[in-house]
Image (cartoon, rainbow, N blue to C red; front, side, top):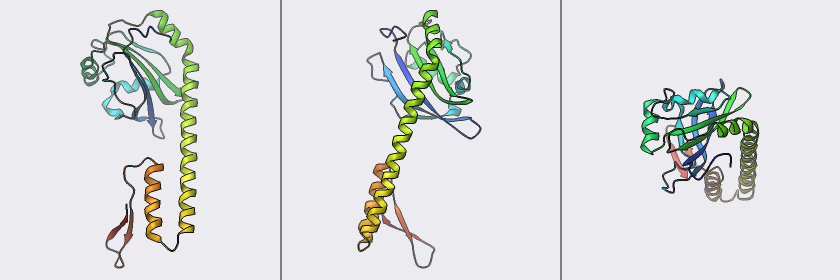
Length: 206
């Protein structure tokens, strides 16, 4: 609501995974919006290694960055220029969100017009940046708490299955891998057993 969304073309919330030194290692798209109707917006869940985006160095600074023209802006590397210009995008606003010294997310708004964002819109973003940070941070905290509760419930469910089905270990193993895969959102879950000699792992359930 802070910008004229009739012409705004794309919007993203980028989640940031950092290491112990607060260096950004992975970027992932946690929310997106497409105002073009073309359906070419990068899907939620897409991940990028930080090294492919040199502009990520800006995410460590708690300030608003305005890109009046991606094509001529020295802060945008050639690979990212090619990606943005290939989608017809020409200008944007980047708002990094930090928890103390730790960058945890960034809001990125993009337009197909050069010099799209007005000074009034820039000031509006600066004024509400603290509230925006709190909203996004609380949402991430809620998601993490919910995920943790689901994981603990899965552990309890597996423990109950093991206790109640000692007479059928194969069925327990099958239930364990199914629960683990589904509840933790994994692509594969396997259980292997070492042979008597100790030189081979055998797949017993997966």
